[in-house]
Length: 251
Length: 264
Image 1 (cartoon, rainbow over the protein chains, first blue to last red):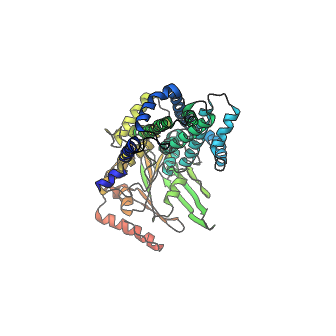
Image 2 (cartoon, chains in turn purple, green):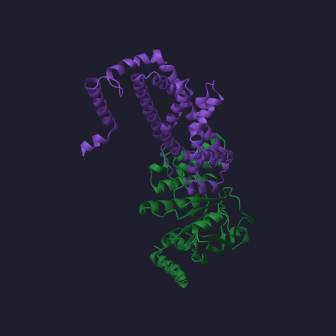
Image 3 (cartoon, helix red, strand yellow):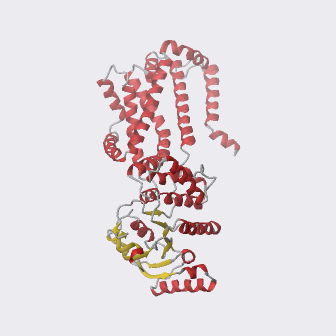
């Protein structure tokens, strides 16, 4: 039983993969085009800043993604607390969402690059729109699952729509929304990296594009590790916030 | 029954809806109730009926949360169709907010009355202490049992100073000890706040122990079949004989309508 538990642990699997990589690519297959030598990857980390301007590109990607998430969350909160507005905006968001059921969202990103080739904010706009639309739709779905008792009790004691929106609907929807944020987090990262890759000017996606152009295997590998660590960290921070501050569920 | 005391009247209330197959389902059919709440005295009126007979629907209609298909609810001679806190409902399932602690739940009710902060704080403390939750102000409802959650809901309902509190099967699924404590609490609220209650239950024992007035409601379709008044003298000296005679009276009334059920 203990053995199986170890195998299910992602950290344990990661150590195994790392071990196999070191043994295989450092000693058995040192020169190949498949994966780089571990020692070269270590050296390339220091070179990433000089050649690829890692820190500035990293900061751009991180701020684009997390600012979009935070602003989308705040807008959803404001709309949710003013429920009449929420319905209006939801209908627009719902129509756009339906469109993206058939047209991949990255195509919209391509158009953004075409329309605003020199803008520094297109990445932000792209992720922001995806996260806002997704959150609005999730909020609407979540609001339909709120226990009827909360409404009945509030309405009967004379609470108005604004009080109910703020104290019942938004509060009930928060855990659903935070759980959803952990789910869409990886999806937003994929979309952003793809967008930056197409755009090719800033961000982690742009580094991938340049590294691919120069066929710089070790840089590609290092950036992949950094991206993975970032996503892992972001996921756990959102999860921590959810568990620490949104301690209730819709019960 | 003097007209001046009459504050709640349910006139010919019917409720029906269409089922999935398009058939018409009648939940309530011409319910009439005249509830006399005496001035300066709290009273507990109980609607006793079998499970799934439309008690909850009736209470929702009385509190104006749900609209009837036909009929009116009259409060103090006026039609009551917009919930303004005069008739507060405590639903069957726990309704205290799990995202608010005890203090915040009670404040939710007090905020409706727009009290200034100082009075709000005083009233909050008073209500929390009254329902027996002193020392639990920072506790969250979902950490506790249904009895705890009921106390919060009661304090929150009292915060808006309603004329009537509707209790929808509140003691269902509670342990014996908690039930006894809550019965005393309801009595305390009735006497101290001169609060009027309408309790909906399927439990005959409960209705005899708590009520000043019992309305028996049959099902299919739901209809009030009898009203039993329990005067103060009987209530205060309720011995086994009186209790059994009341219980058999209730059971007989239901038996007449050929739908006796497992009333505990």
